[in-house]
Image (cartoon, rainbow, N blue to C red; front, side):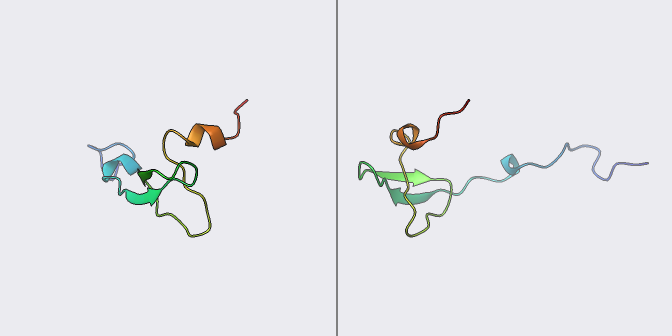
Length: 58
């Protein structure tokens, strides 16, 4: 059976450039950029504040 695209591996999100959106951190009020479109009513945290709000991993 022939592969459809033999020269390429599986496609991933890395194939396209990330689109960043400007936002204001809900914790410190600093302007930041995030790789998703912020939704009204949901908090957005900058890179410095995000670890304080993440649930610990086991």
